[in-house]
Length: 211
Length: 211
Image (tube, rainbow over all chains, first blue to last red; front, side, top):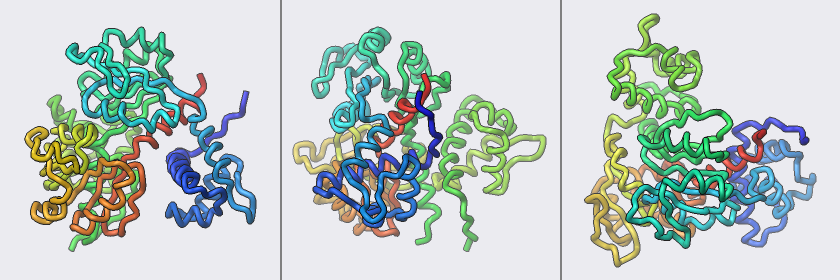
C-alpha cells in the first residue's frame, strides 16, 4: 500500500491550472521551461511554483528547468486523469447539454456514457452521439456501466433525492450544479459548482473595488 | 468616504453560502437562529460562523442569536447584490442559454439585457424574452445600456480578444467560462468558472480517497 501524503487543498486547486498551462506549452512545441519562465506566464511567483511542485517530489533539476511533457504527465497522474472515468449527466437541459457537448472532457478521460432526464419526449434522442435515457433506468445503468461520476444539472428541489439515489447505486463522486448542498454520506465525493455563488463573489468584487 | 476593510478571500468565499442558507430559513419562516443551530445546518463550526460574521461587525446578540432577515439583508449589502447590475451574455450556445434561462440571477439583481453571438441565423431570436444580438453591436450596446458584467461563454480561442473588446468598452467585470486566463488590465474584475478544473479536482479526490 502506498503511503498517502496530505497535500493542502490550495495546492490541489492550483494543479489543474499548471496542467492547463503545460498542455498549452506542449501544443506550442516547448520542451523545457524554467520556474521563472512558467512564473511569468502564469502570473504566480517562481517560488510558489517550486514549492507547489516540491509537494510531489520536485520534477525540476537545478539550472535545467522542468521537462514539460514529463511534468504534464506526472500532474495527470496526481490528478487521477491518467485513467478513465465513466460518467453520466442527469438533466438534459441547456447545462447538461453544454457539458455533454464539451468533448474536451473526454480527452481528459471523462467518458460520458449517457444523459438522463424525466422528459419522455426526448427519450432515445442523442447529444453528440450520446443517448438520452429515462430516469427509471438510472440505477441499473450506473451498476451495469460501471459509472463513477454523476454530473447533476437539475433543479435543487430534486437534487437531494437524486443525489441519494445515485449514491446508493454506488457512484463515487457527484459533480453538483444544483444550488443546494447534498448532505450525503462521507464516502461519496461531492464537487460543487454553485454558479450563483460565483456571481455573488464577482458582485462583491465590483462593490469593493475603487474606481 | 467609507473606510475600506480588508476581508480575507476565504470569508468572502463563504458569504454566498450563508446567504443561501439564510434565504432558505426565511422561506421556512424562521426569524431567529443561534450560531449553534446555523452551524448544525451548514456543517461548519459555530465559532467559524461567529468569526466570519464578526468581520462585518457581528449582527448577533449574545443569547439571542441572529435576526435572520436582518442578517440576510446585511450580507446582501456586503455582496453588492442590494443594487442591480446590468449584464450581457456572450455566446448563445448551451451554456449561454443555461445562464440566460436561470431566472434566479435576476432575483439577485443581475439583469440580463442581451445575448450576443456571431451566428446570423439566430439574430433577433429570443431566450426567455431576451434578444440575441450580433457581435458587431456589442461595444455600442455595452455603452448605451450601461452594462457592468459580461458572461463569456465562448471557446478559448476567441475569449482573449473579446475580453479585451468588452474591457475597452467599459465593463467592470467578466464572468469567464472560457478555459483560458484573460490577462486583462487589473481594473477589470475577472471571476473564472473553469469547469475542467473543477472536474479534475473531483478526479483527484477519487484517486486519493480510500475505498
